Amino acid sequence: MQDVPKIRRVVTGHNDQGRAIVEIDEVCSHFKQGRKNAFICNIWTTDTVPANNDGHQDGGMREGKFTHIENGSVFRILDFRPGVEHRMHRTDSIDYAVVVQGTIDMEMDDGTVVTLNQGDTLIQRGTVHNWVNPYNQTCVLAVILIHAKSVEAGGKTLAAFG
Image (cartoon, rainbow, N blue to C red; front, top):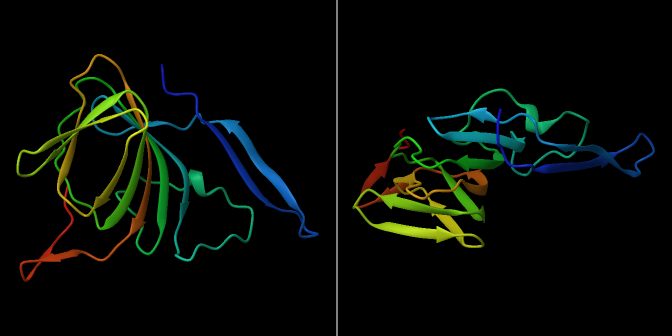
């Protein structure tokens, strides 16, 4: 895949004597295309919260594209190119995002648009949103998604979609 960000992934663990070791030290090569002009790389995933730090399995290589993992977490890098395909959606997660590179617009269902620049952070609390990149450069986001219960507002449950 061309021009994906060079993201170094260092993962620690334990040897059989209980000593700390580096299990993985690599530049991520497992970016996958999501929607048009968007690529994702799962850095790490867990299927429980609290997480289980035992074993030697590579949580970054879990199969599938995740909006979230039921009772788990996802740490991923998102690469949004100019003209990224429109995808309004809501997830059953709380998402912590940091803009690592570039600029991106977050569009909400009421038409509000918030521009985020390199270094800006966002806490996405189960709201309907879309990522828009009308700029002339790629935007790279680091995002952590932690499973959350569906939002309840106005006496209704607001289900995930998209």
